Length: 134
Image (cartoon, rainbow, N blue to C red; front, side, top):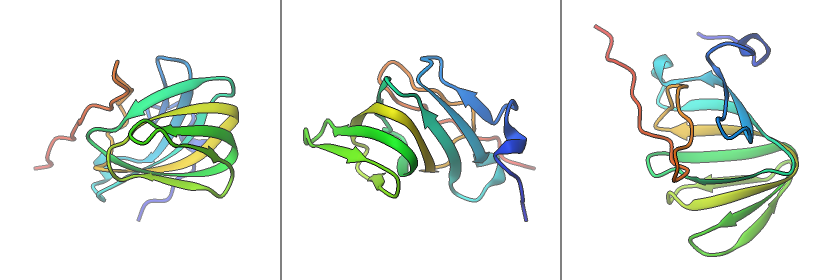
């Protein structure tokens, strides 16, 4: 059993800040836990825009605080995401979040991330893996 808090991982290697300066993420469950998913608390900052494409992952996002506009580049549809709203990127959709008010969310990734990922020039997280334990 693992018990940890988001507070205790602040400032550790599990607390990742984007090179773009648009978000930060506390990654409380990672690939090294070997449970088949990763779990993060992420904050995207008000007034920012982040384009993403999880070509290698499925992501579920639940907004817990704030507001953002989500545009699905596959369909052109735009959604308003507010607390209690979930979106699931089950088709590797290219998307953009335009943040109106600091956007706090809980995210689940499959396959799990290692904690070292940041978006590349295409908005993609590389598919990194943890070494097998012997």
